[in-house]
Image (cartoon, rainbow, N blue to C red; front, side, top):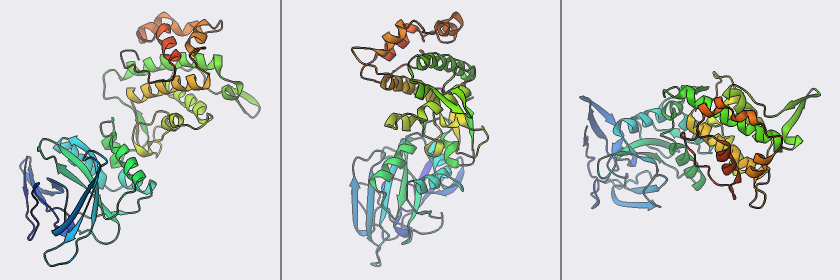
Length: 374
């Protein structure tokens, strides 16, 4: 991969390295020779800066979420457009960085949808157009100073406020999540199980066993107001034991929705509007729904198991003096059938001792068990 920058007449020289302003105050264009194909692309060595008499400012560290602004004057004395940037993510390969950028600028991209959601009213700058005084933005790929990896940068004519900056960078922090690139492009909808791993069938079976055993704890300790509801005078249990993961997760969502709102419940109930990693929202819907893509993975199901255990500790009064796990283990009506030989084969690390230990943690803390125990 080679990159040759087209120098803009009259550009300023900066002691720290190349300084770009180019058309509309942006960095000069880069001609990328990649797989023997020469193409124009938005890629640069450093932050875009103004021309002569440039005025530049970095806020915070230069990692993801850091912001930069620049303004200045062109050689003819006309002011450049003041640009603001936020580094969305870094440490990317050249190919993946450009794939992410292409997904960001595609028609129907989730980036534009998410910007609307967080109140950033702007439009994408066309590839061949200049920034103007209206609110517009661009996503660019930037090479690291060491030239060994790349970052993705959001550049706009209006500064994101602190919350918008946080929300946008939190989305791109998920760039390694299964299905993120497909989700970002916006073309894929609905939900599906992650089938890219050979063990996809086995991890689904493991979580069926785990969540069904947790349902036994719910049955023992949940108040009637949490445990039951009525449909046309017919009594129905909120969370029932099922053989299919989709049905189990759907019931868990019903239970979480009636709990008092907290950071934990909001996190577990998040939909796919901010990424493909929704833990429970998908299970209430047909796989071909028009919602943004969700890919159900081992990671999101592990997050759900840990979240349910923490909710149990909060809702069922776990304490150092009266630990929940010990109460469950000693309960005369505890469902012993959850711990049969078949369950032990499916989840060799998921034992009564293990669950008792997790339930007894006080105060509630991350469960820290991976697929080895899942």
